[in-house]
Image 1: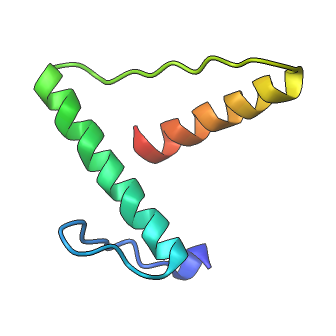
Image 2: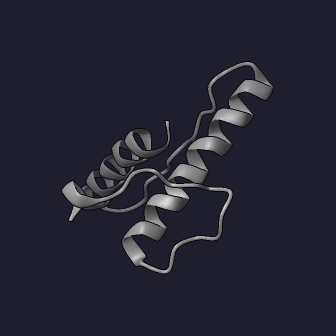
Image 3: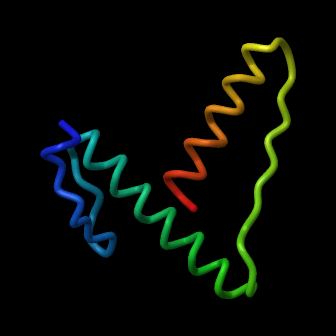
Amino acid sequence: MLNTMNYDIDITKEPPADDTARQYYFIEKAKAYVQRESEELGRPLTFCVTTFGCQMNARDSENSVESWKRSVM
């Protein structure tokens, strides 16, 4: 599915109905938001993840951080 995905997403239009295309649409919107805010502040945006619980929760948090870095930053 990913190999056939059209990455030419126009974020000025309405979000697509297809779930996968919709996710990519909002990822692109988030990227544009982060870039706009970064430029306005004159520095990269940061975030903090606080994990409570067991080691599996910590691993899930690490996976989430890496995913956020790849998709938004």
